[in-house]
Amino acid sequence: MRSARAFRLLMLVSSTSTVHFGVCHVRSRADQRTFPPHRPFRADRRLGAPRAAAEVEVRGLATANPQAPGGVEITSPEVISLGEPAVAPPFDLYRPRLTASLPTILDHAPIALRHPRLRARFEIAAASVAGFRAVLDRSGFTEIHTPKIVESATESGANVFAIDYFGRPAYLAQSPQLFKQAMVGVFERVYEVGPVFRAEPHDTARHLAQYTSLDAEFGFIGDHFDVLAVLRDVLAGMVGALSGTDVEVPVVPDEIPVIHFAEAQEMLGHAPGSPDLAPADERRLSKWALRTHGSEFLCVTGYPMRKRPFYTHPDPARPDFSNSFDLLFRGLELVTGGQRLHRHSDYLTALAAHGLDPAPYQGYLAAFAHGMPPHGGFAIGLERWTARLLGLSNVREATLFPRDLHRLTP
Image 1 (tube, one colour):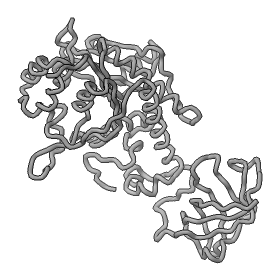
Image 2 (spheres, rainbow, N blue to C red; image 1 turned 90 degrees about the horizontal axis):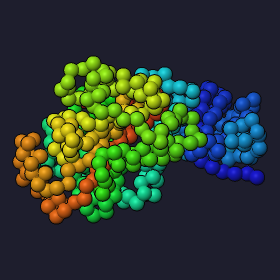
Image 3 (tube, one colour; image 1 turned 90 degrees about the vertical axis):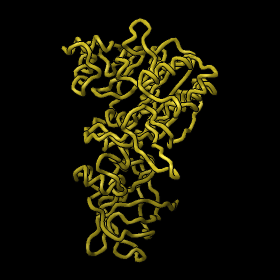
Image 4 (cartoon, rainbow, N blue to C red; image 1 turned 120 degrees about the horizontal axis):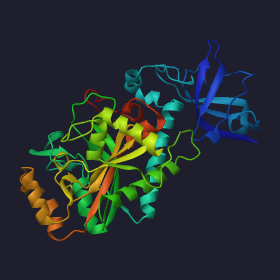
């Protein structure tokens, strides 16, 4: 039976227009078709002398061949040009690996991402997001979509992108935090997948100016450990969505090991009073968790209140510490979460303690003035998750079109 299908065909073409090698880039591994490697074919006269990476339609006889990818090869092929590139690709896309440097790959991302290995990274990311959504959908969460242009800085920090909003100052949202809290009063359980913006002048392998955040927030919790329990199930769902892939997925334990921030600082040999963990500390703690608990995940709880945003709930037993946490995965902070304040009077006190004027937050505070349940949530950085899953040393390798301190194109 003859069949017709449009393929993206990468061809190594000689001066005589003979195709010596072809690989079809199609939508799934099951749909791959190859030409017999022992019998090169001449391009159809309508094709002329095709360039490498030309877009073509192949008509031929689909013949069963257990040695071919997908179990089928195309014999007696007829190749019809659908569109030829104006210039040759900047690198050989038919090779098993791209040997170009990361800056070169990023400069030519629309072409580089056609390579199967690079494309696969974003298939992994897409599957992870699908797993994230599936778990929360089953758990009664509602997906929301919140504004990314805001009047005030979400995290009350200086690392925000200021913009001109019709003659008024505004900012790109650092997170959907204030909106998702307000929506707990509407839906009780909400989540969002969307971009966030951080104007952090860090030129490192782990920082981006824009990344994709997987956020969740829900009400009627006891404390931040209830948030951690939901996060654990979400991570298990994201890992489960990767079954059947070549990714070395982690085992998500039934209970993620937990260490208090003060205990972690003592174990690391730091003096009391340090407000945060350095990247080297995160790596050391992750090695300890793997060695002691056999877990690639570690939850560090109880960060100092002075390090956390104004909406963070303090630990009732140790008010200098918070009911918040960071989740480390393979040596890197992946998730930030915790319990939030939920009483209107507590917010007024917290804003004053941070030296913040409550006026820009009136719309946010209104939700609490009319009553809110105890609630909390978390946010997962998708690019960091994907990079850690695949063992990539730079988060930009897991980002479609990175935005950082230097890069604004493509």
